[in-house]
Image 1 (cartoon, rainbow over the protein chains, first blue to last red):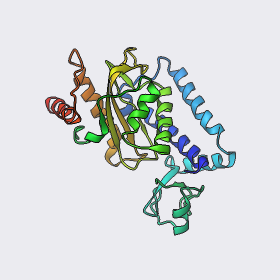
Image 2: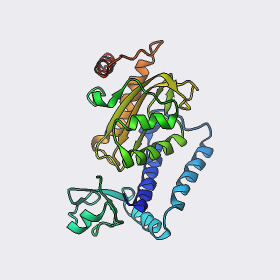
Image 3: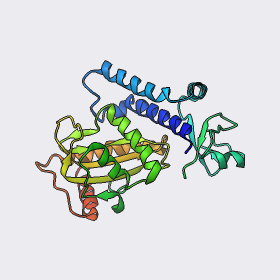
Length: 116
Length: 152
């Protein structure tokens, strides 16, 4: 996978961790989150910032824009030449190149990736 | 939903060799993914562990995360005779591991349901004074099935 796309993937996966940690059904499972909630939230933000610092500012702005618009699923998988975010069929060139290049869905703007 | 139906013989390793947290996660991940993708998922798992150990005490841990690199929920189990320091809340070494990797969005909230099911099974397993783990994956699946049927 393209190294920049890899960073975007890491950021979104970390955002998914945070999202899950805040879910009531997850909290019920009782995994330890540290004794101090304030310290815990601080460490979450620090970890997130570490990842964000590695990403180009323009791409990060684009990531934030898509996240703000859709809430989640900024980086999506291409499934059988369809965008995994909006399910619209992608032009064949985009579908083929998205494993190695930073490409977005022409319809919804999400970043695309393809599993080998 | 039953946990034993999600278990696969080739995803169960009852003789884990690793002694460190990162190594045991890598060893478990190798049952699911190989190469570069396994390494990427490992980094996400380690990030999750940095926020708080997924060790639940009494010798059990349920490392888990969502990953864009899987397209369905993946589950692997492992047992370490010697135990691994996993920063568990009770500070005891972890012997039994359930690794869960889920895609970003899963049909029917399978990720949370599986996590809950694993937590329930682990609770039942630790009711016994000593965790006795079978020697073969087939017997392990049978044991989980029995635990689930008893708890119904």
